[in-house]
Amino acid sequence: MGKFSIAIHGGAGTLVKGQMTEELETRYKADLSTALKAGYRALEQGKSALDAVEIAVNELEDSPLFNAGKGSVFTAQGTHEMDAAIMDGNNLEAGAVSLITGIKNPVTLARDVMEKSYHVFLAGDGAMRFAKDLGYALENPEYFYDAFRYEQWQEIRDTDDFQLDHSVKKESKFGTVGAVALDVHGNLAAATSTGGMTNKKWGRVGDSPMIGAGNYANNKTCAVSCTGSGEFFIRGVVAYDVSCLMEYKGLSLEQAASEVIQKRILEIGGDGGLIAVDTQGNVAMPFNTEGMYRGSKKSTGEEVIAIYGN
Ligand code: ASP
Image 1 (cartoon, rainbow, N blue to C red):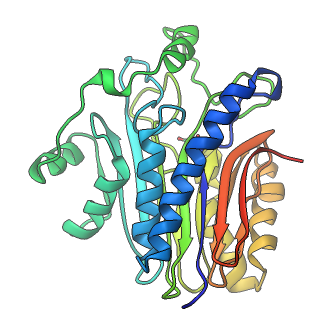
Image 2 (cartoon, rainbow, N blue to C red; image 1 turned 90 degrees about the horizontal axis):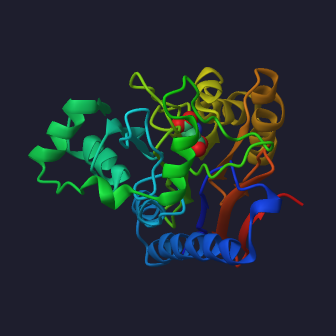
């Protein structure tokens, strides 16, 4: 049996240390652990990396603690607009959705775009019609409601502000989710899902559903899922950049991931982090914020669940 590994994240904008209670920290870690175990179990059973990342992200979408699926942030209109993407490193197939509402597990819809349409990226009403054609049930807005997210929105609603709250100075409960995996067959996959930014408007779309920006997988190099200030991650083409540094410059996963997060994205003013796995099962989880909800587990026995840096 080949080596396998999985890594997950629940967003790079964590609650600042002073605001994190012991009880909350336990809840975050418990939900991270549930998702990590679910994805790992799939890999252990010989399932594909693609299945594993979808399963892990579904768990995180179902947790109200993270800004994806249930618990997504509020838009300026008081709605939830979610984005997600998934990519198979084996054949470079990919699927993505953005500006969708009422869908319990956006990443599963993204996978359906990949597998059941000729397209890669569907947005808004069209994506919703596609979901309807496939028989998706719609959750009502109460399903996605989270009191903390509502409060966050109340603070800035009716202003032109939006909450790009990866800054350590702000209280932030930002939490795009993602997963990357290497399966026993040597295939890589990445998935990312998000509610985006509090008080976003005008159909704002971040990096998460954009192939190459927030999400990328290629069996030649690595699988990457990002979290951070989306506008900068789009401009930095971050996930693809990690892969390029490995492919064209021969950097290791660790070197490539850290070059992008600790240098390149900072140079253009972005903050956040990423998780990545390579064809050998190595995992990198760099971030330049105070923390990043994260976890990883390798078939070689190593397991990590963490929130803050050292
Ligand atoms: N990158 C996401 C976005 O800009 C947010 C996040 O990572 O939490 O939509």
